[in-house]
Image 1 (cartoon, helix red, strand yellow):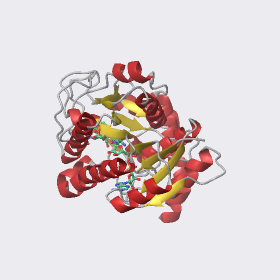
Image 2 (cartoon, protein in one colour):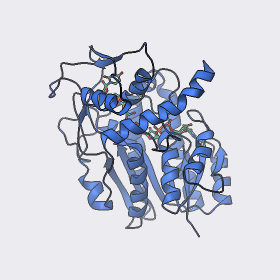
Image 3 (cartoon, protein in one colour):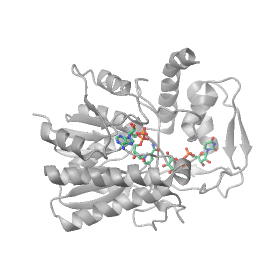
Image 4 (tube, protein in one colour):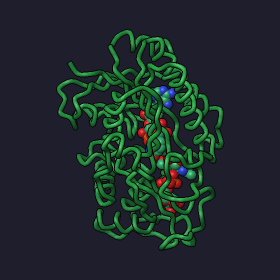
Length: 343
Ligand code: NAD
Ligand code: UD1
């Protein structure tokens, strides 16, 4: 008998990779996703990666639909929930705060209410390093000041606080909020990766786009930061390491009740120009780029202190920046026929 894990937002970027890690770890993922930023085909490909003979169990629906969640919990015994479902664009959240609070906060409230009704009390929540805002020093510890600079970041912090209150009120809850730094890359098979609709903003998807087009050039957002090469420094962590972090966190929940927060990063910073060079080496061609003005709201440099996660769960990121770039590029190339057909 394997344990069922309900994965909200399981068709998305990190969710689909986590479904693979769950199957590989001997769990059975059950996915609920409204497909607002995903394609159900990702679940077919996730099953293909794991060579499952059966498709993943999938409900198309919204986590704000309490009746749907009640039906799911009534149909399957669920051991724990991994909650990815949410909206994640910082810029969009500034323009559409109501939509972001509704999806991210109301969605989480609806989920924990349904879990409470069903007697399911184990939860892993996708938080973000964005809750730190512009950290004063790195590595950033979980105890650093929490000063999110956007409605997106606020929505993550609200949910973390809701979960802490829940664990204080009821000792049955076992909760881990994982603050991801910069998840990037793709599954090494080339079958799963990050789907970007429209113009990408995040660095690795932009690099993929630039490298696959003769006409495009990367604009490096600022070359005059107080960093070794003048460009911003971030903690890029491979999406399969992030996925495996959820397995480690799930196992950690068995250690006891309460709500905890953990940074999920590599614990090292990489500059924009270092990443550009690593990407060029992975795809075997020059990546055209030019230094442009700073992007509003960007912090100069931050990376994670990963000691709490390592000590509590034994997890550390194992993959390199070269793996991130090589796997992202393989995924990008696998998308080319689809892109050409759509053009
Ligand atoms: P994603 O957009 O690829 O995945 C989110 C999934 O949730 C999508 O499949 C989407 O269709 C689904 N979804 C959204 N709202 C829903 C709702 N109300 N009901 C049901 N399904 C819904 O994003 P991702 O990169 O995989 O991120 C997953 C989680 O991790 C998000 O909560 C995000 O905020 C958080 N996070 C991501 C990053 C990152 O860099 N990717 C960094 C920090 C935190
Ligand atoms: C952003 C979000 C963060 C989210 C993360 C991953 C903001 C302020 N923060 O982080 O909440 O968790 O994405 O989804 O939006 N860069 C360029 N040129 C580009 C694109 C990016 O130089 O075309 C630089 C940026 O200035 C930054 C670095 O690359 O220094 C990484 O950018 P990005 O991938 O967008 O991540 P963050 O800004 O760190």
